[in-house]
Image 1: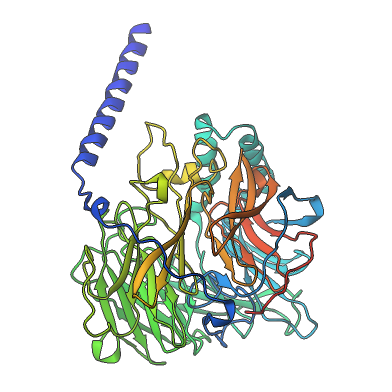
Image 2: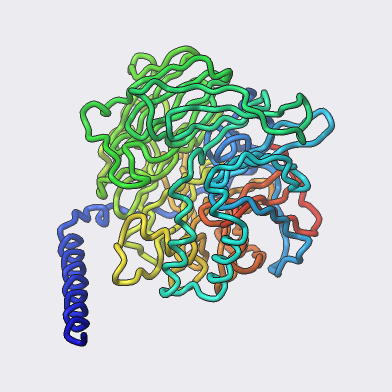
Amino acid sequence: MKRILKIIAVALLVLIAGYLIYGYIDEAMQDRSDLDLPLAPAATNGVRPISEIAMPPVNPMAAQGVNPLPHGEPAQQDSTKISGPLDKTRRLEADELAFVHLGPGHFGAFNSSEYPDGRRLLWSNGVNGLYKIDYETYEIYDHLPTEQAKEFTKKWADGITAELDENTGTTALYTAYKALTPLMSLSGIYTVVGHNGWIYIAKKDGSVVAYGDSIKDDPASKIELKAKFQLPKELAGASVGMNMSFDGWIIFPMERGDLIAVSEDLKEYRSIRLKHADTENTETQSVGYGWVRNSIAIDKDGGIYVASRNHMHKVIWDGDQFSTDEKDGAWTAKYRNGTGEGTGATPSLMGFGDEDKFVVITDGDMRMNVTLFWRDGVPKGWKTLEGAPSNRIAGMAPASMGKLDVQKIQSEQTVIVAGYGALVVNNRPRNIPFFLPKDGNSLGLLNGPLGGNPKFQPYGVQKFQWNPANKKLEMAWVNETMSSPNGVPWVSLGSGQVYLMGARDNEWTMEAIDWATGKPTFHYILGGQKWNNEYSGPTIDEKGRVFVGTMWGRARIQPNVPRPDSSSK
């Protein structure tokens, strides 16, 4: 028996050694020309007054409110003029936190318009199904459960939370794996609520379904299926993201390169194949790494912005058909892609009215670059930037995180945009156990369920800023001590803060950072692992409260403090 155990031990050592040697050789052979790119120069202009900043137009066909669709509005900025909380650092009292248990995977919650009686809904779709929730009280009005709801119960979730409250170290990796397992069955992460009160969900089988109230103008009535549309077999597959055009069509890309529009009554559809989809390998490389990996941005003039594995695309929607023809205003532009996996960012739009206009992503280099593309025409005489693969790129700045000087950083998040400011956070764990892959989905174990542990917790928040005077992308500030382990931040121009979900000493927090200077303003201590936002970002509602997803449901931060002067979005 001892001899067998020795053989097994030696075999394991050989396997581990082989894995480590292969990893070192593979890394040594990688092209790291990204590290030679020039860093962004220091900003030479300050933050503009809020009155001078043009915000994205409101989509009249979406439900009216702060978050009827992912990232708040079609431009995907994650910012608002509504004021968020201003306070001192402290632990929140029990009555300052609202929570409703829904199960895993409730990254987003999307508001309805206001009903005649003044009530409003939150719709949330996760692993355990679709929920209809009162906007104010968090009372669950109805629930359409999935089969998974029988397995991933509150008792199961509470057990995982208790284990993580006891241990978020390396020996808790199996617990972290159990916590993330339900997400493998998640369908319809991105949903949209229309002005008609319907919530639209794209399913894995290529269908699009719409649900609404069973009784008109009664938010507490049962959920009712309103319409269903099935894509033809040749188009069916995995979709990634969802948005709504300004004439009410539901727009979403498919992982393998088709762009789909479905009418709001779900009776008609249009589709187009993105450029390069017929000449590149569009196979999905692994879970979450399709040829198109994330959602889309839309402007009011029919511009639809999609990022594929090597290119940024502008597709034109004329109200009836898509076009990828340059004569109609469409374009494609190559971006840097040292990883070969493409960008993980949802494109976001910068610049409205008379401002310079861009679409913004982080690229596919190992040390990602915040990349701005001219949204419309490229200015006459514009010179291609150093290291840029396209003349359409207006700005390109490595996300080095200042003194942290990170060598590897990638993101699955949109770039946060407010005015000419563009903000990114570091989600790469500060330490990775030697036996785990150094890149890919396994890192989600460390910045997700274990992201509050300082051993793994990533640090670094960096803001860049476009200078319209000298036509350069500059670095506004970097904060190396702040941490946003896994969620997308949200900017309030009204209070001058960027809010992010952070962690300190294994307790989860909400952090406020001055948008102009990058200096910490205050933070709220929420508590233990129940409050891990696990890939969900904060959103500010009409009353200045902050709502956010957690591991097992939805939470609202409602501090007992006077509201600052506020502007409506």
